[in-house]
Amino acid sequence: MADSFKAADQIAAAAKQNAAFYLTEIPPEIEPVRRLLEYSGIAPEDADAHIREIRDKAWAVFPYGAIGSFKFLDMNPTLKDPLFQTVTKRLKSSGSTEAFLDVGCCLGHVIRQLISEGVPSERLYGTDLQPNFLDLGYDLFRDRDTSKATFVSGDMLREEDPGHETLIGKVDIIYASAFFHLFEREDQIKAAKRMVGFLKPDNQNAMIFGNNGGPKIPGWEKYVLDEMSWRLMWDEVGKATGTSWRTETNVESDDKWIKVRFAVYRIV
Ligand SMILES: C[S@@+](CC[C@H](N)C(=O)[O-])C[C@H]1O[C@@H](n2cnc3c(N)ncnc32)[C@H](O)[C@@H]1O
Image (cartoon, rainbow, N blue to C red; front, top):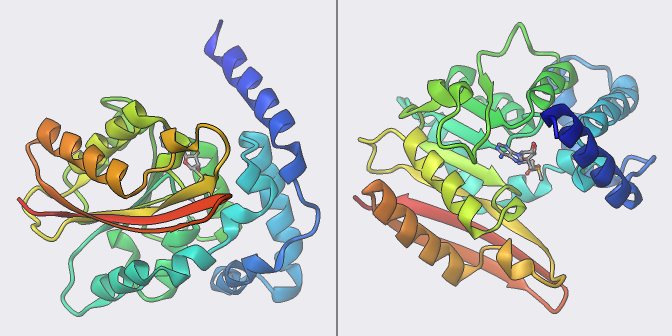
């Protein structure tokens, strides 16, 4: 089957599967993004219509449930993550030259958050499979001509992707929010190996962090990395890349849901 037909089929199937997530009302959780839109110069009274228009364009690119439900603009898990706060301070500290990459950045709201907090945009990078998401990010935040952040599209599951060339050995800190749980173990390892290649090889403080989680529906263990699977994955990634990593996880779990915040720190 030609690739364009395959993609159209995947989009149609996802639209059907995720139809129930599509909301017409904007939920209160996206208030931080409404505030962030002030950075874009959008008048508060125009913000909701603007958000709806961009959400519908993003839904047409790929109908992820998180796009239909506006969750893709929910900044609260990121803002409440203590490690994200530490990293923001690290990036803003005087004399810092460190660069930050958001993998699976979607429309790049986390990058705009860091810019709004005063991190120099030239040290910020975002990458996503969907180039149209990156374009829609510029439309949402209206900063195509003002931001010096770098956004590149590429597939984290490919061993090489020309789109990613500019990232190789370039960054110090990688953020991966709601990303690893899209894949099963073999693909998670592929993506993690690519991330190691993006880190500056000489920064002993290089780190990768983020979160994953979801409902405990049958088979969830294959997607959501808990404490043990996160550690085993990084043992394997370390062996394959000649690097060594200390892992950290914070797991919140009940009968129905699991949420994991994770980090890995380079030790060699
Ligand atoms: C669930 S969204 C998470 C977005 C954002 N990080 C957040 O936390 O809201 C997953 C993102 O990963 C991107 N993605 C999916 N597969 C990918 C791949 N193979 N390579 C790069 N990005 C991918 C999707 O396009 C989407 O923007």
